[in-house]
Length: 384
Image 1: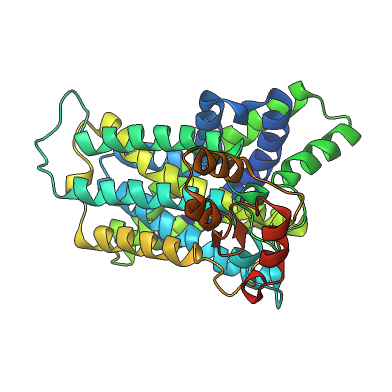
Image 2: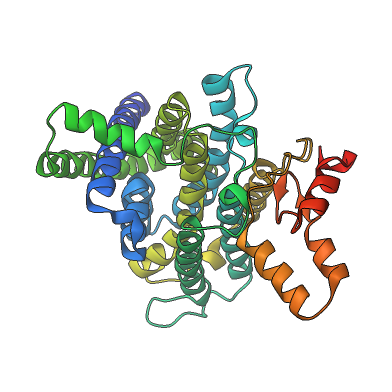
């Protein structure tokens, strides 16, 4: 590794460019392999996809932990969460322009669950910073283990929710994206089929892109640590700003590709999924460094954690300004059927009538049970 600042900057920029290009190919081949091998349908496949799509952060965290540069590891993880959430605003400007905001077009209850998981793991990370640095056993610290368990359970629950949410339109707000979620994955696989790219070839490209990403991540960490020393910047601040921004470039390219295909929900889901996974790297850092990582966090790191949670809440703002969608007399959700049947059996007609009027931000929970009540409800001013 060179010692002069100009050469270090050249190495850093070249490594960032390599990670950017390799990250784009990594994302494309991941879409192809996940579609053909059905990786996203099982918990193990979802965990594997999370690791592969965050390889730059994995490489930087592992390199920093082995070199005991815990400041860069912590700053890259927590700063990466804040930077990647800011990517949503960049996608709004570059991807949608003057159209409706990305979070408006991608409004979905499944994204609310994914954002809630991000906030949950960040809260546990803040709690872990308050523990003693001597509270760990066999390279394991309690907070990091709890983050891994919480993330895995949350991933499993979100996977179950993606197969059927108990709301009308599967929890998608009216007026949002007009294509099914996952269109980018299907279109990428379609293009690969048209170009004759086999599964083996896609796997080889994936392996090459992963190798370039890992090498680039190590070069980013090593050169970044020396650049920070040359310019008088702490490793925590450098990792949370410049290094985190460099590793967020693949997410920016992937998000723009999703927006071009009008798959807005997947663009936001990629950001939330990566942010929920990044705190898991505290577990990796603790294993490799042999010490508790979270108690070594500074006040700046806690501030970045709170900022990441706050930006996630901002990105999850519910579209309260939407008019309620008109009810469909032919649609009856199973929640309404069960609720009306239960109230009828227990002879509670007032509860049955209340179930027919449950509306939440444009989502119809149940339809009117009779023709007369349907007509009266459809003609009421509150139905529109």
